[in-house]
Length: 114
Length: 115
Image 1 (cartoon, rainbow over the protein chains, first blue to last red):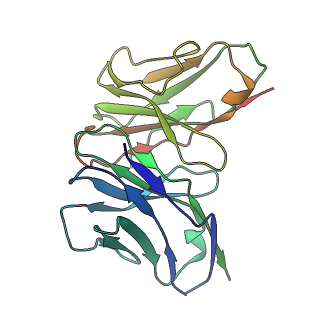
Image 2 (cartoon, each protein chain N blue to C red; image 1 turned 135 degrees about the vertical axis):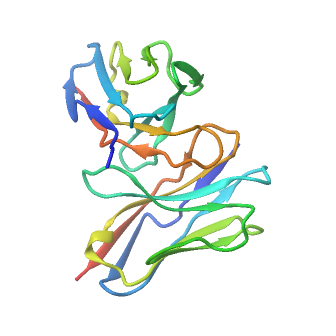
Image 3 (tube, one colour; image 1 turned 180 degrees about the vertical axis):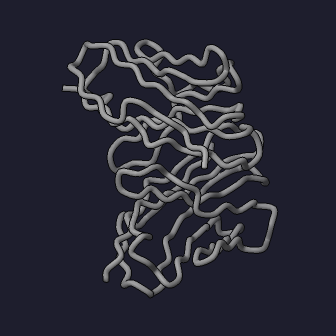
């Protein structure tokens, strides 16, 4: 069974600075996918970034990048040049290729200070 | 840009009453998911459809919850009777396919309060 752990219930960052959200996971599979989803207040959840476990290169999407450490089963999200619109709940999630469901962590609330 | 539609957005009901939620996935998406998100927690899958067939309902409390996707398009999730512990956000998501790492697109959710 897969499990996902987010140990930071809440994080704060000053506008324009960089913040890193932590995520660890556990799986017995050799191939899987990892995701970071953003859930703004009263708005739908959207995909921020996706990492395929067989790819060694860390995924990046504009200001968002991940640090994927497969041996340590760690998948952190780095947000550079933080903006007020980045304030949201962030969820780390995992999925196996043939498995059907996303397994989510408990989430990290990110607050951005102006 | 196409979005997943859900209604109602908010629902207040008394315990022991029946309640139903509706979801319209993005056109062409074969896979539809219903998740339950308790306040302060991550979403948990209740049921997954591939077209009109259920492929995973292992976490669905089948004594009170039911879900259908009759024509493989929109879907309804029903709770009968509702209990206080059912208060949560119910999220619908869809994806082109359920396998590999296809992105799941989420709707705005239905917030259920059971009194």
